[in-house]
Image 1 (cartoon, rainbow, N blue to C red):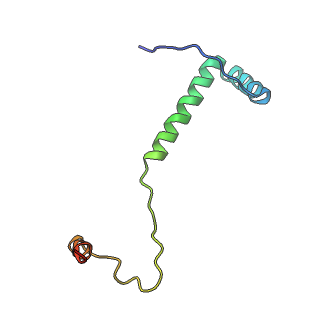
Image 2: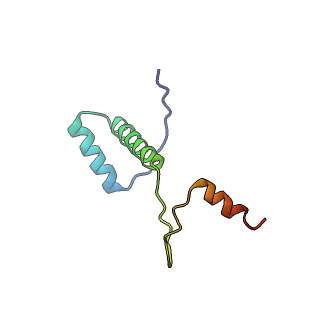
Length: 81
């Protein structure tokens, strides 16, 4: 079951003309084209934002001690207590 909500969109004239032309070429309504385009956009954005982003820490000087085990990291954390 799909629920539909009517709304008003403000589109630039060139975008509206291209969308109207494309919907006619595809044999769908402008509403269907807009819904599909928006759905695809939102799905692609949600997938790209869930990808794990890697952060590279800049290291200056000797980088030999940056790969420490969790035990070594805990020892360094607690060293000053």
